[in-house]
Image 1 (cartoon, rainbow, N blue to C red):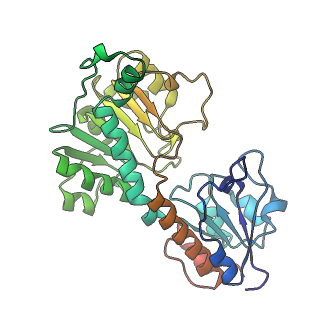
Image 2: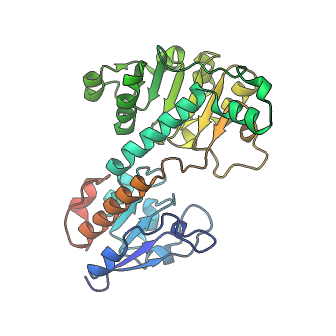
Length: 335
């Protein structure tokens, strides 16, 4: 495959020059006769056509947007490979029409992201942020003031019951919780296997002690957790978001927390990212915020790296990769 060139988006490298995830196995591409290079940083969400047009494939480590008009003007491009599961900002139908295959790594992400969600849920259940602050500020007399609700006998609502949601339910059920869930279709064979009750979104909001957001960000899920959803939640309930910041109306969430209409929140994702330095969510005592990286464990890096490199190799050599997000593109693929 001499001359097959892969561009790796600039997010792979930190400002200090080190690699964000360390070695992700790009030597496998070179060993297979492919070329790769780190793309320059891009201003804005959409890379310039003249940059994308240089490559047969793009390994998208961050969240650049790939609209149809971009790839239509870059006829060399065959493949956009996402390092991770999310694909918001990528026009799947448009790229399929142009014959550009889009892949992601959902299997590798599933367990680390579910464990990250469980970590944040347990942090809320034990009021970890408030107890941490009491300890580091020397307020040992406040021991017992921040007693958590725990999880036994509580109801956890999983908003967006796909692969990650099902994995989370499997982790939660042995802890003695009741799990309810909702998704776009309203049904799930996996839910039936696990004993998870599928309910409408409004019922999930009303019944849950903890709501965990695992829904993909799409036009229909943007601000799925809105003012009405938050108003339906119990004032003792907590919100956990490990999906995308845009699934939650952050202004409405901030107001609900500030006014005591919600007990707390734990957020690995925000809108925008990074947040403004004066964002009130960063200083609220009942809120835990992490920088969209909580699932980035050693096993996450190893498995996602292996899957994304394999997808790049497969497409380059004419093999259908395992996780194609726009199947119609395979029949129309370029090259």
